[in-house]
Length: 334
Image (tube, rainbow, N blue to C red; front, side):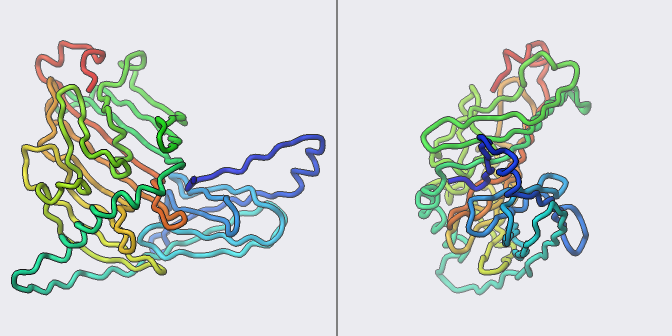
C-alpha cells in the first residue's frame, strides 16, 4: 500500500502513441482565507492509484490519462474539495482549502468518573495494533535539520530533504532529494544521530525505544503505560466532511524522564494519530551535550481507512559541554 504513488510509463515501439494518451495538470494549493500556499495537501485521482501531494510551495503536477478525471484534494482539519477535469491539453489549476469549523470542548464534571479525554486516549492505546496493520508499503517526505551551538551562536547547520520508502518488515530506504551543510562540516558526519527514525515516531509498534549510547528510553503518548507519564487535555474538535479530529494537548508529568510535550491530532473514528506538533521535554539528556532539543511536525493522509504518514519535519539542536568541545563529531554520535 502506498499513500503516495507515481505513474511509470514504458515506451516500447510506439513512444509517440503512448505519450499522446496523457497530459499534464499543474496545480497550486492555497488556504482560501489567507491565500497562503499550502504544502503537503493530498491530491488523489478517483478510481486510480494516482496520488501525490503539494510541495512546500503548494504546487503539484500530475500526468493524467486523456478523458474525464475527478481530483480529490484533502488535508487534515480542512474540508476536502473535488475538481472535475475533462480537457486533453496541459493546464494549470488553483485550488483553495477551507478550514473546518473549530468546536471548543464542553466539560461536564461528574463525580467519580474519568475525564473523557483520558477515556479516549485509553481507546487509542488499545487500537494501536489495529491501526498499524495498514502501514505496509508507503512513502513519506522528511525534512531534517541539525543544529549545534557552543553558546548562543550556531556553528553548525546540517539539513536534508529526504524521501523515505517503507515496507513492513524491512529497513526503510532513504532517497536524498537535497542536502545542505555549513562549510565547517561538509566533510564530516552529522553530530546528532538517533537510532530511532524520529520522523515516524507514531508509526512504530515498538515502544521500548532507546536513543543514543546513554540508553534514554522514550515513553510516547501511545505506549501501554503512557497514562502513568502523561496528562491529556482536549483543546478543540474539527469536523471536515465525514472526518472528525481532536486536538489533544500532551502534558508530561515529569521533567526528569524523556517525554514529549505540546499537541497531537487524533482521528475520532480510528483513534489514530494523524498529525503532531511535538517537542522533547527537559528529560532528554546526552553525555557531552547541553540543552538537547527535538521538534517534530508530522501529517498523515487517509488511504483506504488507514492513516499513512505523508510528511515529517524533524529538528535536532544542542550545545557542547566543555569536554564535548574537545571531541570530534565522530566521537559524539548519539
